[in-house]
Length: 587
Image 1 (cartoon, rainbow, N blue to C red):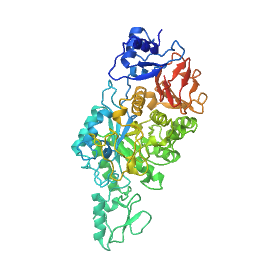
Image 2: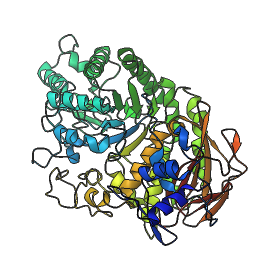
Image 3: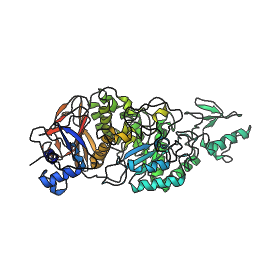
Image 4: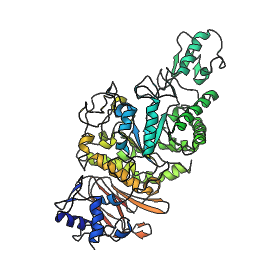
């Protein structure tokens, strides 16, 4: 029986292969063009693959020259297996810097709508979108700042971004595409320009020597006012009063013990859920009661119960920028997810492993999550992410000859974790940006021409950011680009529900210093993930591993082969030869 590699080579040799956008691979000195059409034709016409007639993924057999199976584009033949639940792949969007529709240099909701097909076009038969089925919107409420993490009106859309009708259109278009939208909900503090605070502030100024009464001004109890100036308190001008604002004087802290405020919060969440959003990203949950984690958990429990009573399948993910041992207890609130900071940033597990730490550090940590988080909430959904708007861009974590390879592999290590995975806009292009926050929120790199249609100017105080890799325009035409690597990783995640939903087991016996082998199990099905985290080629003997009831070998189904350089992965008789910074997915 011919292998798929042989079939594709045979078709290439007789000049039969044609396609609209070519995927070029250099193998044994021969340029081979492979598409889903060619793979299917090879199976049907040349008798390749034992499963050709039942529509399942073909088994990749050994090539006659002994090189093993190297057709990594087998993923083109595998259908997506999307499940409509809260295990998703989210794309974080900073609207201000994403896409400008009206030429004022500031991103807006109409600009985002125009780019939805880039994120997900809703058509499983196309291969031109990223494949993300969730969007996290950074704050879109009215705010005096560019970042909008100080909300002036919790019931409206910032006019810089558009109108409420624009927002409703966005939700409708996302719904058509199967995209769940979650909004940033900032409850630790409001803007000093919020009418609640302005009214309370003016009330105290006009109060004189009297005692405040919430019946006269209910908003007085929405904040922390005191006649004693403690750390993080600022003066109410012309009075003996002070107000708490731990982040900034113009971000007064909210008093979450206030029952009237909690009723207001309930009305806010109901307002947006009723409009059609899918849930909330909760900002700074560890600061609700700074230094009092149990109080934070109790408030999160109330908030989770409130939101779930309004919409049962609403998704909640909280930001607690802490070590894992300190944010894990937040799952006791019943919240769906807490961002997994342990794996993120330049000092996180992924970056450390790709910069020389043992691969076991990643494998053991991934395998431990069920026990760590599950001990607080058996229904937890992990929220792995690699970067966000507060962290330096990941392309800056790596230097030297293998920086592009490491940037690619880091994407797979993040997106192949269980849970709802998050991608910060532009990471799929290898954007750069570090230092002050404005630099981390640079314009989406649609084009190298800053004046091109849709390009934003970015935050006013942003430094000039020199990009390491080319823009989307160039990367779309380069099959070896970071952009195409991200697309393929997301596609494999969408094809294999075990990746996002599976329980992970670290296979220590077959792993090595720069090799991490994980087996994931979901609903009775298993996948094997093999990562090479160093630059050297590794031979990994997988023959002793049982996968779906059989030993890994020639009949094992190859779901994906990810090589980040020119050398390809080969698999023969359970022995995998894998170049540096590569990933193998088996089932």
